[in-house]
Amino acid sequence: MDNGAENYLRYLNGDDGGIAEIVREYKDSLIFFLNGYVKNIYTAEDLTEETFFRLMVKKPKFTPRYSFKTWLFTIGKNIALDYIRKNSRHRILSEEEAKNQSTEVTCFEKRIICEENKRILHAAIKKLPTQYSRTLHLIYFEDFDNNQTAKIMNKSKRQIEMLIYRAKNALKIQLEKEGFVYEE
Image (cartoon, rainbow, N blue to C red; front, top):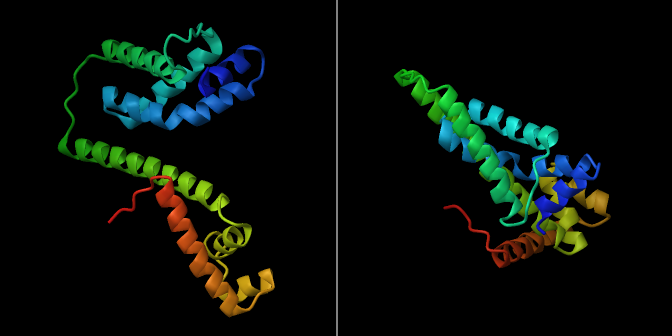
């Protein structure tokens, strides 16, 4: 049983944290998927909410014939198709509306990619030796300079500079091990 299925079973057994985990894990990718059907990011967000609402209220039976994600996306797709049928009045978008919609989708895609890269980065930093992860955290996430970091870590400025250098190299190696691809 996959993680989504386990969380759904938890929800059906009375643990509301299960549905919260499902929403957290699948919301963004479901919005992106449904946007492919409705071609409007705001409508896709509404349909995603409706999909999760249906899970919470109707509590459809999940059978592990397919993965939970496949089952959930099928429910979302059916909701999107119902929406399209009900709203089949074709409306021609102005050139400006089409550009705005395209810009919104691009921004949403970039945000999803950025969030995924942040998640990968934080996971890789956690795998580094403690001194490296602490140094990187203080410098890049807390915006301390080398002198402040040296004071906090009870090291000299030169030691911090060496730690930063080694931590960056270790992080690069860790990210490459995990298959991270750097953008040019």
